Image (cartoon, helix red, strand yellow):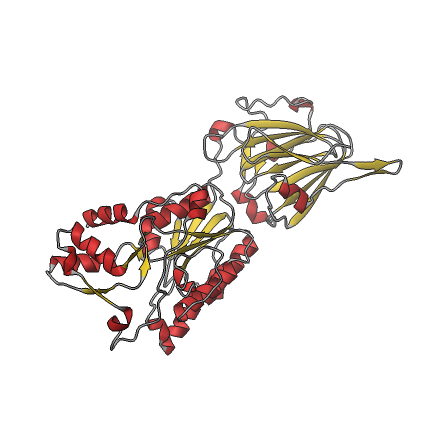
Length: 462
C-alpha cells in the first residue's frame, strides 16, 4: 500500500494523485476523493457537484480530447486506462501533452481548459469523474476539442487508433493548428465606473465592468441572473461612501442596502459558483483609538457608514475564497481632498484643515495594483490592509504638502480641530487614527509606494 501523494506534471495545474488501496482477501477499499487530506497536499478545493461513471466494455475504446469549462478529478474504479491530456488554454503552454496510465490506485486532477482523453486497456473498465459544474447539453458549446491523431501532439497510443473504437464525432475533431483555445476565466468588476473601478479597468482591460443602473447589487434577482459561469474573480469596487449623508434617515437606508444587502447578494453567488470575491473595506470599521490598525483588530465603528462596512466584512469573511482589502483616505479620479487643496492653492485661498485626524493617503492606482497582485499570485485568502506607505500625517500636514508641491507656502494652510471644523455642520463621527499596518500585504509580495511619491505624480498629471 503506497501513501497518498499528489504529483505535479508538465501541464500547470494538471496533478497526478497516487491513491492507497487498502486490501485483503475480500478485495480493496480506497478514498477516491478525500477533501481534507488531498487539499493539504496541494489538490485544489474544487467543489465537485456531479459524479459520472462510464463503463467501457472492450479494450481499445478511445475517448476524444475534450477540454471542458470546469475542473474534474478522473479515476478508474476497475480496469486500466492510458490517459492523455493536452493543454488547450490560451497561453504559452498551449499544446503541451502529458500521458499517464491509470489503474484504481491513480487519479488525475484536470483543470479547466485542459483536454482529457483516455484509451481503455482492459475489458470491462469503469472510468469515474467528479466535476464542479453540472453538465447540460448546452454546455458542450463551451468545449474545445482536439483530434486524437494530431501529428503535432503525436500521442503514442498503446493500441493503434486504427484498431480502436472511436466515435464519429471524436474522429472529426480539429488538428491543433485549427483548435480554438479556451479563453481564461473572466474577471467581473462591480462598480467599474467609480474611481477605483476606473483604475482597475486600466490594469484589467479585458475584465467585464458592470454598474448602475443595469446592474443593481441590491436586487437579488439581478445578481443571481448574471452569467457567472466562466468567471474567475469578482471585484466589488462599488459602495455607498457618503459618510455624512449616511447619518440621515434616507441615507441610512441607502447605505445599508448598498453596503450590506448588495454584498450579501454577491457573497451568495460567489459561494454558489466558487468564485473568489475581492471586497474593499475601510478604516471606518474601527473607532480610531489604536494609532495603527492591524487586520485582526475587532470591529468598533463609530457611525452608520462604518457599521455597514463592518457588517459586510463579516459576510465576506465567511467565504472560503475571498480577499478583503481595508483601505483609507482614497484618492483617484474626480473630486477628492487633494484636488480640492490644489484648487484652493491655485485660487490663492488659505484654508483651515483639521490637524487631529491621522493616516496615509491611498491612491486608486496603488489599490488596484494590489488587488491584481493578490489575484494573479493566488495569495492566501483573507484580510489585507492596503494603503500607500510613508509617514503617518494629519489632513492638515497633507494639505501643506500639496501646497508646497504646487508652489504655495505650506504655512498658508492653518490648523484646526475636528470639533471646531464641525461647528454648524452635520458630520458623521470619524476615526481619529486611520493608519493601517501594511506588514501582511508586504509579506504577500506587494510593497505599496510612499504616498508622497504618488502625490507628486498625481499632481503633475493634473
